[in-house]
Amino acid sequence: MHAALAHPPRERLHGLDAVRAIALLFGVVVHASMAWIPGAQYVWVVHDGSPSEVAGLLFYVPHMFRMLLFFLIAGLFARMACERLGTIGFVRDRVRRIAIPLASLWFPMLMAIVAVIAWNAWLINNGTMPPAPPTPPLSPRNVPLTHLWFLYVLLLCYIAALALRATLGRSALLQRASDTCVRVLASPIGPLLLALPLAAALTTHPNWFAWFGIPTPDQSLYPSLAAWVAFGSAFGFGWLLHRQQALLQRWTAWWPLHLAVAVLATIGCLLQVGLAPKLVPATREIADIAYAIAYAVAAWSWTFAIVGLGLRFLSGHSPLRRYLADASYWIYIAHLPLVMALQVVMSRVAWPWAAELALVLVATLAILLPSYDLLVRNTFVGSWLNGRRKPRGLERIASR
Image (cartoon, rainbow, N blue to C red; front, top):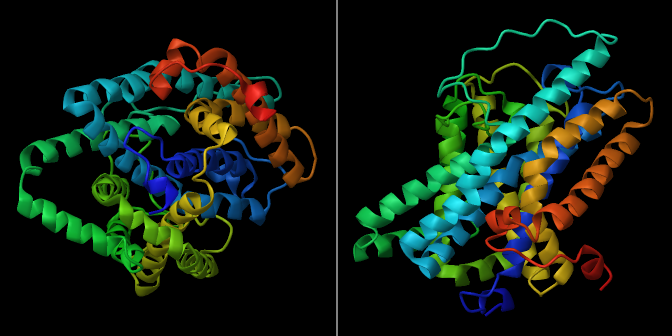
């Protein structure tokens, strides 16, 4: 058995930990690139004067799969924690590590984002504030969850998983059936099988903007059907996959196949939609249906490939990788207002777009990594995010 899969239940699966961190850090890249994608003024608060289609590629490709990847790993780790802690212990743990961070950090993040938006508007209007745009009243259908929507959807997934576990989880027949389904889904044809319901949900989603892929449920407490199918199926697949972790061995061997399919399907999608956003809703014509299928296949193939790569090459213990895996949760939660503020700064200079984007990414990590080490890791915030307080030591770890 692969080294990453032979650990006892209490041992961290370092390869999967690294993959989860990669999914979160890809989110920083996606949001940072948005100021430089062509037509950014129509889709993002900050737009730079030197757009590039390459920046569009940096957004488009990670955005295909990063949250499918995250929810798959989240589902697997959730069942692992539930088995170890019991239902009551699991609920307490998820309240502390997911619900409390969402409840306590959502409003400060929202206010920080609003402050950056106001600052950008003030600069654009030469030191005067334009009239505030009308905003609909706050309601369950209009809640700006911002980039923290994933915590809210995670809580919904936990509730659904525990409810199904309590009502159907004792059936031996259903367990055998689910194990059989998971074995099929973990096979080389798994990405296609998982892609079909996702493609159907995308093509039936009202006003689906195909270039942006899976609609993120960041503006409402009611996730769309497409979001439920995408992230709910990823979480559920991960939850059930934990029952048969040996299946992950297949992905360590098949990652070249999944990567090749992912690249080819992504190229096919880009040939149809291009590297610049198209703000025209997709139709249900054959070409758009084919695009939805190719997009969903690419998304799931990227997910399988990156999990396989992580287990193949990142399963050994590394203090630096483990530290970055711990820090990635905080970095993702705190990054968006900082990234937006740095984009505003870069929009005031006339440098090459690649240099500006690189500076945004480097500065974001240069600020958030020390903030994690000093303000989070060994504080009560760290006990929320990582389950317990951990000793500081960024410099010591990096020097090894």
